[in-house]
Length: 507
Figure 1: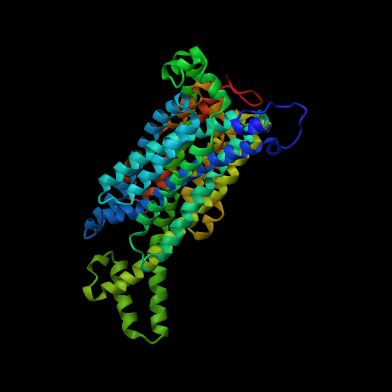
Figure 2: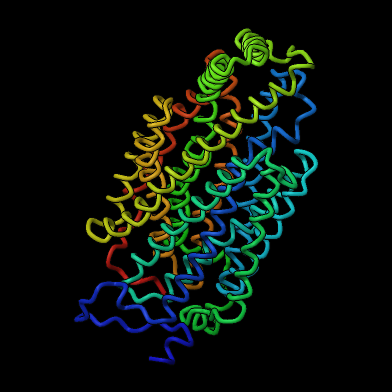
């Protein structure tokens, strides 16, 4: 038993062993699962830090446009979308490069490289001085982020006992929600502390925190071993020559079919999440800005009158009047400090609501991703995907059509998160089951990451849709609803993909 734990070899499955899946795991199995989960968790922490920091970063880096509020609003939104597309393109590029490396030099070595890369470049993002170098750092970060997923799931899939594999992979994906929630809590804490003597802007501190996961690479370097499956494949003459080969992937008819259809299946979830779902915190910020501003001014004016502070009440009334007429840029210089205090309070509250929305999405996501594993073990991978795709479509349209009030963050947003992110639990389970050991990281990465090249155009399409709905009060709402149809694309390829429930990994 000790030998298996040290080398990372798979224990043979006993068909008469009826213990729960988690009791089948040795100490080394748990070590591998924890390390892979932490790598992906920190990866998702980085992604979510970017999503939450994006509005504040764009606002600061484009602050010179503030005298023209129309241009400022347009360009902060546009460059936010562009930086998202650049990040996703980097993610896709890194996925292709490191997917190959995962098959050629090993899962553990590649995982260490990707974690070091996304951590270091996240730290560099904190040093940005313009939207251009910010986008460049995000591209570099995306390279590392894109490579981590494929090697992580390939590693876990190959090390785990067969009966535990589905549950371990769904747990690996589900734990990523903790990275997203951690990012939301960091955003919440720094948002509430804004204006309280922070050494630099909150978004810069968020990216500095994102550099910490590099320490995990030290653990990987010391203790993590390559899976026995990969070791065998890498030392088998003909197979070793094809390790991580796109030529081998696309000249074999079965693997080519799995790769292309898996790519379309991944596009549904990836585009749906990055071009629609992850804009939900931005939507709540957008729809809450006007009612929150009105509420804060009315409350502060009433408080000043109650306290007998007639001067402050008059000042606030004057600023509020200018805001209601869309002329807040004409606020007199002598009232600028009063306005700045109110603006800071509004901004803190909006950031808090944005963070609560992110947390709500990821609470639902945790249960959705783990549930995919349990359900797919009962009814099969393909039926579970079909249910998840339809549920993601319906729940996302409903959220974007109705999201307005704070209570909805805690009721309907988690349901959307459950449905949308359950798909990613499916990707972690299903894609490694479609390819043999010598192409597992390459094939998984192709499905999961090439779709991101397509997804990179999602935010750009959203720019066009925002422009198309510019006459509406909340263009993001209608742009999101329009793009929800992407979730249905995956339904068209499911009939042509194999059912892998209960089958061993291809060798």
